[in-house]
Image 1 (cartoon, rainbow, N blue to C red):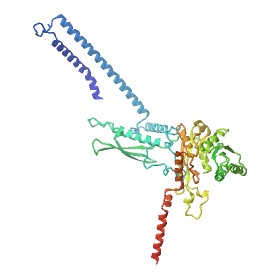
Image 2 (cartoon, helix red, strand yellow; image 1 turned 135 degrees about the vertical axis):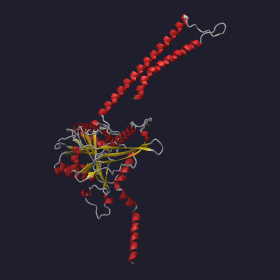
Image 3 (cartoon, helix red, strand yellow; image 1 turned 180 degrees about the horizontal axis):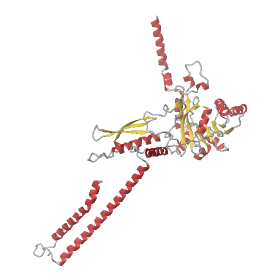
Length: 532
């Protein structure tokens, strides 16, 4: 700034000197270019000649006028630049006041009230930026930030999910924004003048970033160490940043009355009567007897085994005195999306929570409450991550017998996995489903329709609640991947089939079964020889 002010003060003097120099050059030029006389000698003009004197004065006056106009133009440009600089400075100050730099927040302990107000303002701005009051539009199904659920004794987390890769881009919006912000803060810190060195400072950019590491202590904050290229080979700059976590802030305090909140469970079905009988046993115990605020809609494709399915439904209705069910029959090829869409649109009552379910699902009464608590019309839809059961014949193959179904429903690494790549089981209000446009009815057969619906919700302003739940299970069954499926659907089906069988360790035991048996046989022979 001092250099700039000195330059502005020196500028008029410089212009004056230029004017004098130009005038002198003009006089010399005119003297040199005067025509010669008959004797071929240079005829110098007489200084006191009126014509020549007036010509010189006219030229000088014209040049003076030109330079005066040039000086006025320069002054105008300088004034415009000053005004623009002042405007930009005011804008920057306003932005800094509105969004304080986390690195520059200082608490004045001599004025505790002001310090507390500044801290609360910053923390509230953080809450405003977070997805607390409303959803944000997301680009893909993998960009949604999942919640982790917990009880007093346990935490249900997705750290061991199967969609994680050893190397991947930070597709989750919160992680991507966090890392970008940290790098920008570090670059800004490097480019701040130190006030000591008089040499022209180097300007750092994000391209100078080499690598960084970070770790989070959930009750303290996140520590970042970022390394940048230095001024010479083998030299580096390291910036250490810390993002402190603020105190817990109350955002809402509301009473929720779910006594009259009805759930319409919609199940698309074709054949599979034995599986439907098992499903109805679960539905009767958990849905009818324990919960009681439930409706069942079965959308059946074709006529094969239809009478058996209707008989199971009617027997349950009589024995449990349950009348809240609807049976819809469609004479066409099975389409899960079409069945769920028809079932949702068939409902003629008040706005209702829809639970899209499959016949091989087991749910608890606690899950039905989670379904209600995590949905809100025009605000929230619920995409639970269910626990998928491995093949019981493999899990319990070394036991004398396979335990009962209820005894199998335990959440352990050896018994199943969080199905975090599946989006088929979902709860939402019917109004949100209709407003979002429902399912893509062009998709036939198995797979794909659930992801398309999920993406629609992600692209809207609705908040998508994605969390593992302890009361929703996918029961193992042998998966058939039909030849009629498209190549993409067939690939998805085979991947799902491979993951459903057993854990990596259990599959490894099957692959190396022959080697294990050979080893055991050698051990027995060795023991016999030793005994002899």
